Image (tube, rainbow, N blue to C red; front, side):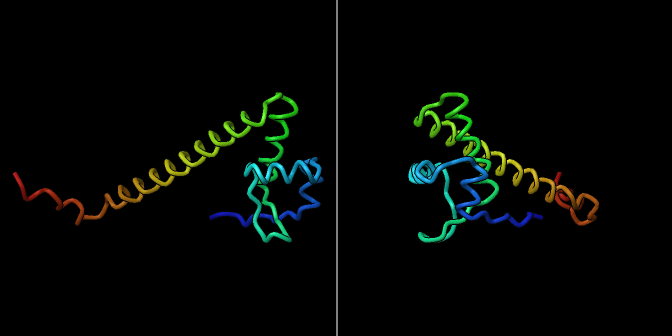
Length: 113
């Protein structure tokens, strides 16, 4: 069961992420952050906030340039996508192997020799 994401308004997001408006607009234009909402009222999630803090740390603490940030974020997105796909695959495999106690599943393949 997924938890409902807390919606963060732009001003609160700027304060929590310790960003100025111009920087936030650049990061949105670069598609490093993808807020929801409309053109006049954007909203951010906890995941957006974590991502903004990561970007800030990469740039400020580690000195990663813009191209490097884009590459790192792309790789992280790919890794998360693969983890999600693997989790779904494992769940599917568990669901298929769960009815092992079902007597009808034992009859499959036993009539051939």
